[in-house]
Length: 260
Length: 314
Ligand SMILES: Cc1cc2nc3c(=O)[nH]c(=O)nc-3n(C[C@H](O)[C@H](O)[C@H](O)COP(=O)(O)OP(=O)(O)OC[C@H]3O[C@@H](n4cnc5c(N)ncnc54)[C@H](O)[C@@H]3O)c2cc1C
Ligand SMILES: Nc1ncnc2c1ncn2[C@@H]1O[C@H](COP(=O)(O)O)[C@@H](O)[C@H]1O
Image 1: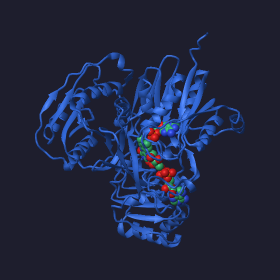
Image 2: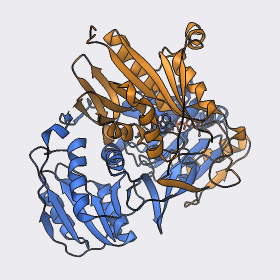
Image 3: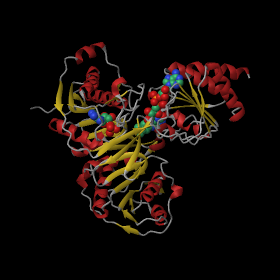
Image 4: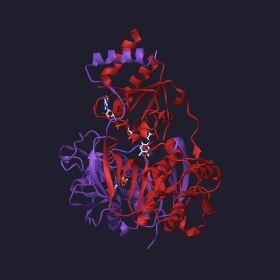
């Protein structure tokens, strides 16, 4: 077998989340959002992870990009979305219920399903927009004994090395060099994600999505209750027609804040 | 009950959120051990010695002179064996985001991040981009937790005196699989948001790039600077030097006039010190209204053009 040095096998972890435009009604058991009127979208940072994987493959000239998502049947929509942007195939780890799962349990399930694939690189989003755990990609890296880096805002990958520019706080950055294989979480803004082409959308229909049943064993952290946060500050609410709002704003700017 | 707090520091200065983590650990109550890793930390261990905690452990090792995720993980695993903590606590900093999940997977215990409060082993964190809160509990013994910025105040730290102990670790170089270069800042920016008196800030609610002229027109009549939320910068509509938030600038102007910003915590940490917050958002439940002094519910695309006209006529 000829080993192609430039070949890189990349997994992109993609989560489906409730879109930011959805009305957020707390479900009757108070443990999650009532999903019956929710619209679902790809977790926004994961778009950037897919784009980065595509760019790495294109730069190296060869490789495979596999979209991996765990969740109920509906998550196949975001896998297809990844495939329509050019990813090669998908893996769906299917759960029976739609509820939230402990990130460590998600990570173990994903590991179990992808271990045999021996990915060179796993890209994930920095954090999910719904629960904001910010850990799944790193958990998987540790469980699969990979090197890890978070908050990547640029990558520089050639045959030998994986270099990642990490975002630090308050406008600072740092380059890290990682041993392969590696699991890297991607910060938004790293690239400008492409839109699927019509050809891509048609082609995606023929691509393989392997379905593996999830097995949830135990959960180490449980979401017990969801509630609306209490307001701590006194706020004047101005909820009226446009002209009255404008008049009140002028008044506030002039007399209360003394902005001019 | 034993609690381990992992201290973050840079250039001989303790991270503000590490102090908040100490305050939080003291509130939970128990024997608090602070862990400091790395060189150049005399002033940090000095400061810790004036806190009412059990002790400070200092680890220096030639393989981990500055932050490295693998080195930190290995060191903390060794400390955990000795301290046996029920809680391992950090501030929810970018560094904590990097190493805490590694510990979680390695120790097979949960990492419950970015908490706003802890009450009798019930942990509260924000979800859905700060729009809702969730109570989380853990079904395992020890937990890793991190506190959101300003969830606890360093002013509440109980003072006392505590000893310093040096702790030797032995590290296997083959476990260290990443190397980090020196941190750096990108070239200086053309705008100085931090000293601006008045700021007009735009979020994704401006809907498209062309509409940013509305913000610039408003800023012009007011004599304000224009800032932005991250998605506006990510989309390339405005340069990153205008970004406010945890990865951008921290501002505290006399007026922060926000247009179509939802108020996610990573944005709010950069502007909540503003003297007056005037926010326009079409969603009456937008989290920005929680911290606003004036909450204008409405469509900025209708309100702002009229407001500009009116201000010009004054
Ligand atoms: C590690 C990390 C670091 C981050 N750093 C930063 C940072 O430094 N700065 C930052 O800002 N974010 C940062 N973020 C992102 C942050 O979590 C939010 O995603 C972001 O702040 C949301 O920006 P937004 O409010 O503009 O957009 P959205 O959340 O999309 O909100 C848009 C708002 O506009 C309103 N709206 C829409 N149309 C109109 C209209 N016509 N009139 C009035 N209102 C309208 C909507 O109701 C909504 O509330 C970071 C995230 C992470 C995980
Ligand atoms: N159920 C899931 N399926 C696939 N990827 C996931 C899943 N949950 C989280 N991820 C990935 O991990 C990242 C961080 O998620 P979280 O740790 O939940 O904040 C996401 O952006 C995804 O890339």
